[in-house]
Amino acid sequence: MISLKRVEKIYRTSSVETLALRDINIEVPEGSFFSIMGPSGSGKSTLLNIMGLIDAPTEGEVRIGGNNVVGMSEKEMAHLRNRKIGFVFQSFHLIADLTVVDNVELPLIYRKMTARDRRAKALDALARVGLSARTKHFPTQLSGGQCQRVAVARAIVGDPEIILADEPTGNLDSAMSNEIMDILLALNKEEKVTIAVVTHNQGIADRTDKVIRLFDGSQVA
Image 1 (tube, rainbow, N blue to C red):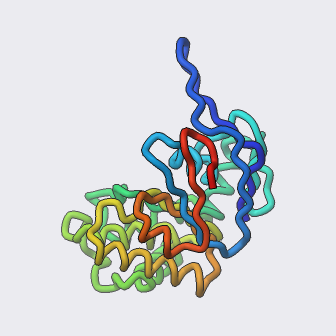
Image 2 (image 1 turned 30 degrees about the horizontal axis):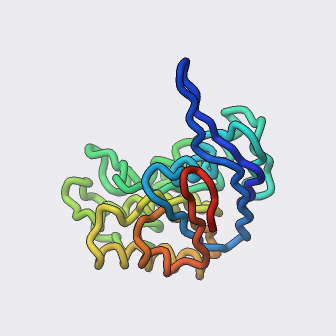
């Protein structure tokens, strides 16, 4: 489902060159649940952004669902990203003046769907994360754990094959963290969604099938 070969990422300015990733080689089978660990600045988020087609490698090959994405146009990558990948972030990134259901609908706006179909899929996604009773609330009326459930619903509303989560439990207490992980694990086991989670929490990593460890931009495990 995700394949990276000899991936390197260099950030350049007029006076500084920073090697963010060096010779990364990863093969992720369909339906896997894996975590990415490493100290701050080790390249975890950069790696996730390359997997999510938000950033491009300086060197190497990236394949998502069998598609070689290196050399794709921005439009082609945006289409692939919208169809195949869902994102969950530490800070939720919900729009405060939109209701919960409207936030969840957002990824579907770029698809050829009727408003009725968009609303039905958004309500179904919210039901899957246990928030059917909060559809008309605003993010400011929810707890942190509920906001992250909304973010998960937004990630799954388009039926992605891959979910990429960057520290999804970083702002939550242990009970809420376990609830979010339970939802992700259910998506992985029951719907065979391939999931990658960036985390600093060894307890979270222990619940995944495989751990990829980075240090100073290099893959160490």
